[in-house]
Image 1 (tube, helix red, strand yellow):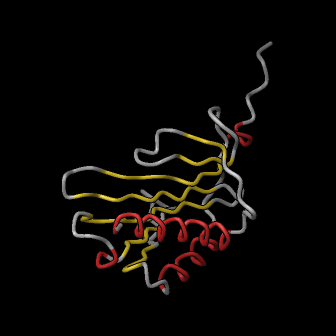
Image 2: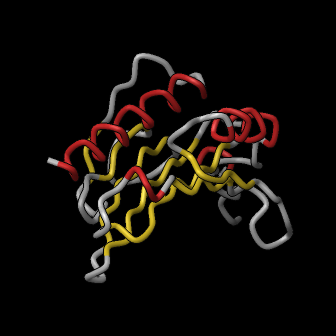
Length: 147
């Protein structure tokens, strides 16, 4: 007799939470830090909300910066911050909540390469609280770039 199939639901982020992504899109669209927000679900990427950050907020050495946001009906998420620099360097970090084998479900991928991973604690997992945490960190990063 073969073993029962593995329960993949425990290891899945689930389907995209379009309602939460639309909520976050509205907040991104009204934030002065964001030049453009786009959530255009399609069959290739049905769950990506992208926020392009305002270039004038950055020193000239940063050629582009963006947030890639994925949110799921399970409450799992990924918020990926990426900077592109004129010398070809990519500086990035990521706030994640998803099933994995490397850390706790809630964790942070450290800059500058997002390869070092640490456990993360947030006061709330509400999407707007996570959004506020991330935007505060981005503003602090911009201040660091200018100093």
